Length: 124
Image 1 (cartoon, rainbow, N blue to C red):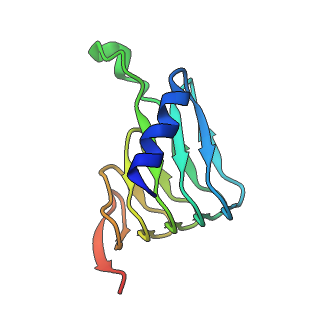
Image 2: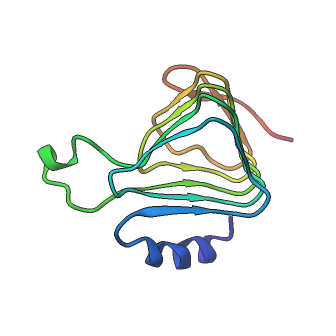
């Protein structure tokens, strides 16, 4: 995702919302919102049973007032039943394996899997 475009879009998501790019395929995915922010780039594939969190339920307990933004950059692939926690970025062309629980930012062109998800390879 063009970082400048992503940041430009975010100003329109001040109170929460979802921005979905062009030519995305999203199948049976749950977005847990609570006024969180979610930006999905172009040509992203999100398979069925995936859960994407866009809020941090513990934030009020920790005194955090800023709403996190979850970003999935261009051409990323999210495998079946993956869980992506709030406030994370999935990099361009990254691949998230089936059943992965993503707890950290995933750099561009990396393959992550497991619970918690960790790098298992790179996209060539």
